[in-house]
Length: 98
Image 1 (cartoon, rainbow, N blue to C red):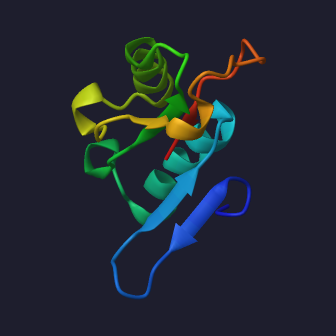
Image 2: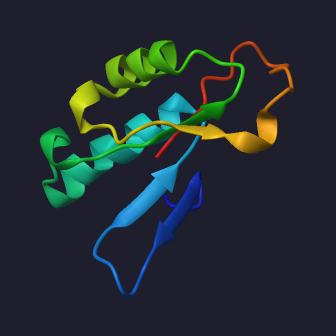
């Protein structure tokens, strides 16, 4: 599952991470965590990364609704500084949730 998105695990830290721009992959991941390991949504923490020309608050609303995870469980969103001054070409792109 970690390889469907951009996944990671660390020896020195406890936990896993999956990031993807595809809401279906992230939603499936959260459902599998609950089904296979009993990890409820209230135990999850998320981070949103998005392009500089996008509306971070609207994207946070989108991901919170899509994943059914309260906004309070999201860390501070991260703006990709590499995208400053560049226009997002794909209108359907909603950032990456991890």
